[in-house]
Length: 185
View 1 (cartoon, rainbow, N blue to C red):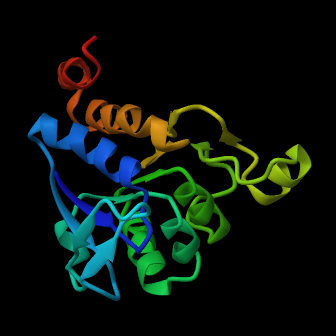
View 2: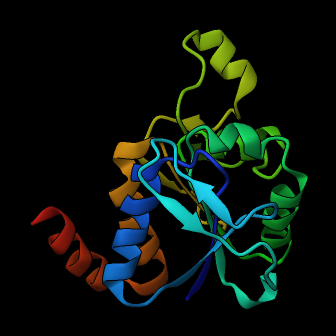
View 3: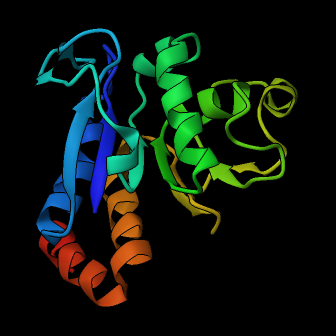
């Protein structure tokens, strides 16, 4: 599987590396870092500097992954990145997102109001949370809505999100094999 990873400045270190470590361990996924504006991208905590491609052919990829962190705030107004994600949705390709990234996708119309998704609860007030997120937003660590959308709640869900992506694409057996390597169980 060829995975496009959208890396805007401030992507969360743990969300990126947790998911991609699981996918790498499966030996079934090749990934390419993409940023529509710049080739050197810095993670939220400055731990990682990614060399990203600024121009890719989206048809060469099977799915897209969007880590959260402060990058999700920038995603809300980055039309090139949003258009790339919309292209994946329009082609019925998989979209994987974690933390605040699913909120950004909902707010920009990429996640439909009827779709179930997990995300970071950006609003502490329950009423405000309901007003600003989809009615099917939940607090599960991972949600696979079975319509090409798999989402994770927060950084601590990164490994579980990676395992769900493997299970969805390659089956339970490989997911369990990778899980043992990541969780020792």
